[in-house]
Image: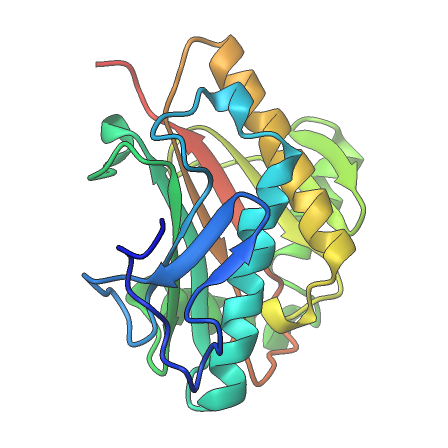
Length: 232
């Protein structure tokens, strides 16, 4: 990204940008949140899905570093997400492979609905809204894919996208709780899902990864869904 990309304010990041592996993270000039950021995967402007190797951990790790730095500076920031819309069929506006990081004092509508549903489920059932389907699917063996570290992977009973695969990180509440091992497990799982999409004849995808409110939410579990985009 050189010197053309914007810099993070010195109070948030002394270096102006976060660099990790091939990833460069910098502020989004068209922000979707108070602390919106972009994290590029590579200097290459196009990647096949098999090119999203487990080294995409660098991208996710940079995003998690950024969220921690923002929260250290501004404790009012409670709501964050990590999103990818790759190539035009996914709704992406640029072919360059990158992730969008959302960090804001106020939740999106989807975040608010998830918090409310998770808290209500915990109150009524005494357990996690996100871990319950994992347990059910593993017992039934219908949609359970497997486990990688603390993350469990299933296909969706009621998918939001085509060929959706979901992952839940057990015993964590927010992005601040995720360890380096958690990030590595998620990166490996996503890479395998994307390779499956490519083998099925697709080259674009959406990913949404949500955190609970950063002050902590006993009822929440960080989770994400991957979905491929239909052929035109």
